[in-house]
Amino acid sequence: MALIQTLDERATFEIEEFLIEEQQKDLLRFSTAGSVDDGKSTLIGRLLYDSRNVYEDHVRAVTRTSGGSAAQVIDFALLTDGLRAEREQGITIDVAYRFFSTARRKFIIADTPGHEQYTRNMATGASTADLAIILVDARKGILTQSRRHAYIAALLGIPRVVAAINKMDLVDYSEEVFDRLSHDFAVLAERVGIASLEAIPISALEGDNVVRGSERMPWYEGPSLLEYLENVEIAGRRADAPFRMPVQRVIRPDQSFRGFAGQIAAGTIQSGDLIVALPSGRTSRVERIVTFDGDLESAAAPLSVTLTLEDELDISRGDLIAAVDGQTAVTNHFAASAVWLHEQPLALHKRYLLKHASHVVPARVRAIRHKVNIETLGTQAATALELNGIGEIEVETDRPILADLYGESRTTGSFILIDPASNATVGAGMIREVLATAVAEEEAPRIVLAGRAAVEELEKRLLEFNYPVVRTRVKDQALLRALLEAKVVVLVETDGPAQVVNRDFLLEPVADASVDGLLAELEVGSGDE
Image (tube, rainbow, N blue to C red):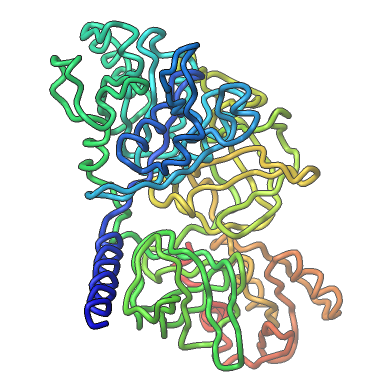
């Protein structure tokens, strides 16, 4: 009995030790891309099989008899192609995500489609990747779709790209072929702006240089694909980046708890840190950082947490909790790189819904600066973007959004466009330039009542800060509420004492009735320029 108990305790200890070791491994997210039949699914299947990350029953399900012989052949592509249509047509249609682990690192793979029709799925699968593997058929070289995927990888800011020159077995493992194609891809990478490139000759079908080095290519002295993936440095999110957390949900299980849940998009937060809630502009300090496993003293991107604050602030889904220093831009007009994902071309001035983080606002595309010619990688004038088209556009939203440039933050620097009629995702964009700053929805003051001279000076000062202003002598409450709905600052001329209308539509006296005092009451100052 004691022996059985000892064995049970030992097994429990080994399992706990194993779980601790797994948690301590870092995680690399990577995607595969390339043209049709370049061998993406076969490569992932071979990688999973040779690294012993496939169950035996799954292997048996994709094993077939070769011809009329008794030889058993594994169809590696079927280890990832799961849809019936994918099996029937022999192409990847949807993004297939797979998790596997080695002794050194954990991985999440996004096997993305190569067919031009499903480029939108490739963009989706690569959007969260730390690294992209772009396959090139050694017989065909770099094709149009290969160039498109390389360009999208650069647009998405993927820091590292591997050019996997596949099917080397079909060109007799030729060093000359590999050198020529790796040079061509290096030229392509430089043109589209890929920062780091590694070229590896492989045969996904035969397993050469996938998990282990190949004896059939002694001229290649670099790492196998898995060796490179295990050892490549992961370009982590900058720890010193300004803190950003889009609020996804307000959690209030009882009267004693009110927390704001979301995934940290950038930066680090600690208990006691000063934060600002946008768009209201109200500040507070972090009281607790709550997770399922207990409270934390600090948390960093991309962890999902719930924050509680020392003060009661009006925060809801779509708002942003940010660091007071280095606040995000409040804008309703910006330029962005865009990938068009729908059969219906982009139409100028048509109303779309723009989803940015957890916030959705009406928007229009005001101009197409240019589109990219994938064949030449040059730019050309355009009045529309067709399916899979890539270009630079100017977007204007009906209400301000809280945006960063994409190079500074993927989450708060990206958006998707949705057709409000069909609810289809029609475009994806990466913000490159803020063209105009705006007043956040709840950041603008409510209503100010003051004398004529003060109102005139207030109007002048507010316009300098780009606030939309309406002057009136009318005090009709219905009219004033309508003006507030239009998101403007209302200045009411009055013969009485200076007052402001608060968020509950109640009059409040002003301690300092000077213009500077009124601006202070309205939270407007030199920092808003």
